[in-house]
Length: 454
Image (cartoon, rainbow, N blue to C red; front, side):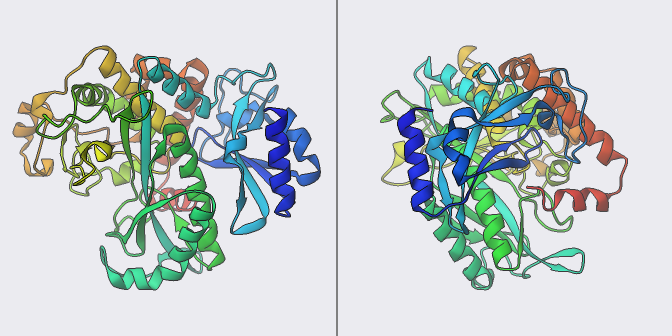
């Protein structure tokens, strides 16, 4: 970090009366973690970082250390904060956060840094003239506690004005806090589940979009808590209610970021040949990709047929049961609004790993000039097709368990090579460990240990 940047961060923190600044990162299990420095040590920490044992990136969902080469009790990485992410916390005005890269002692990006993985994928895309705009679209439950049990805050219906009224004080404070941190709001509505909400935010350059998702999660959770409530981003916090997705909308732009390269006005669905190659790459890697975008045991409770969470290897226009949706663009801004939506994704994922994986898969489609399988194009609910019809169209179920998805990832050399050896090995080790733990327990154990983690 340059001296001028350090000075600006310190000035902002001191002017705001901040006494603690947290350096946050997201681990391989999708958990937001961090260490904080007191304001008196901030300037030094901005230069030297904060040391963390390498073992932290080998911790599973239950904080059980996995055996991963180079991630034992010896050695540490440094949390090096990005000055562009500095923000005083509206819900805790004596505190601030900065999102961090994981650096080695040699001052190079550590091989197991998820944020650097996304940076590497984006740098590769830039070599062929592509820059990405991304919007993540998380869903979450607003709950209260009855004894030791979490319960939905209301029993309103999808898009219900009753649900909007009940949660308006919390949601208004969330919106105000997000805007104070420079995150623009797009739309808001209640969802299918009781007490379930979706507050979508503005698109941003890919790295910033991933950063924004972590800030979003922290903001929603903290504002809810200040209102005596608990926000859960878990994929399936209530077995009898709708699941929480985190759909990824993305588009590729030219070097000047003026032209959307996914747009083609002559195409029936307004998408370009480049976009079709991207679809081809994502569909090629889809079974392995969900290990990166739906990485928790709880994720596979959500990925079920007929639940609008997507459960099949198919794509289509405005089809919310397709793994990859081609959204219709907006009148008057056709070029700017053209994008693809990746739907089998949830907030138990590390957003840098999930987004990096989606883009890496798409870039493989571009490099190999892949075309999506025409028979996998679908404009109906795939659950209405018979097993024979699905087989004829080469449409298959996505992995139905974390173990199956992890095995697919292990066998996908394109994705594991993109991740790099250390990140891939540690990530897979944690996924396998989580499977071992949760597969031996009952449903209640799974729900309880996922509910308030994300």
